[in-house]
Amino acid sequence: MTNVLGRAATTGPGYWKAATLGTPAWLALIVAGFFAVASAVDALLPGDPADVSVESAAIGAEAVISILVAAALFASGSATKRGFALGIATAALVGLEFAAIHFAINIDAKYAVAP
Image (cartoon, rainbow, N blue to C red):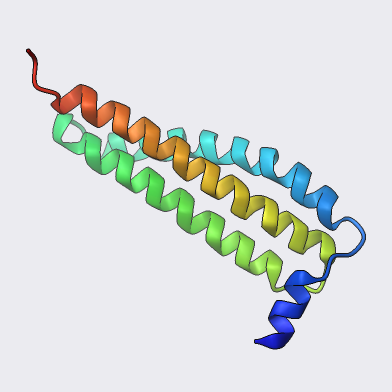
């Protein structure tokens, strides 16, 4: 555990550059992936009742993919890859916020009670 924490706190050449450039790059993939996954799930589960399932599946798939990629990169010995893992984690958090807002807007529009 101490070795992992020490490695996490250690930066090297390319760490911050990869973290800084990795965030917007991964965020672009998350947003594009969100709509791709939502379209695929919507095709498998057509109809209005599936809309909540579509949003939830897209959010879940993006979170799992981001976690797996970031964990694999962080475990490497390269400072640049660990920096990119930090960028992925940051983008995943922002992407989850995007998905939550998108989900909230859609569910509110679908299930709001008309005055």
